[in-house]
Image (cartoon, rainbow, N blue to C red; front, side):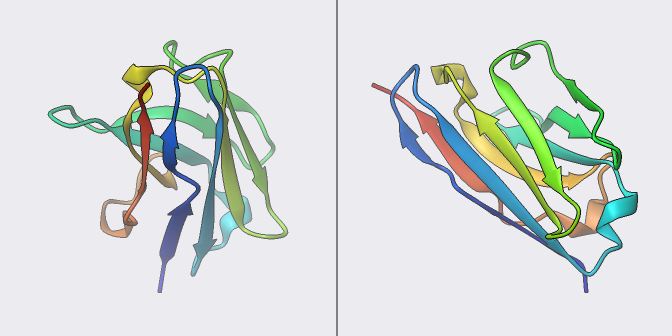
Length: 115
């Protein structure tokens, strides 16, 4: 059974940092490109960062230079380090494959950036 479990969200002031983590199980993690997605209220879910099995990364323009995605293929985890957070980063954050597996969305972790 595939499970994707996100953690690390919380409330942070603008300019602050958070590190999100995703633990994957039930898949051959090391062969898949993984991504972090987010969905703000009233908006569609968007892919914000992606990492290939070999470690090549891509980012959406709005987070490039502030967010860093990384993975540990020995622990089946993918992390998202978020720095210089802005109120517009407020959203529920999810990890999934890229492209996403429709049936395997986890519960996500909520990030709120507010003063």
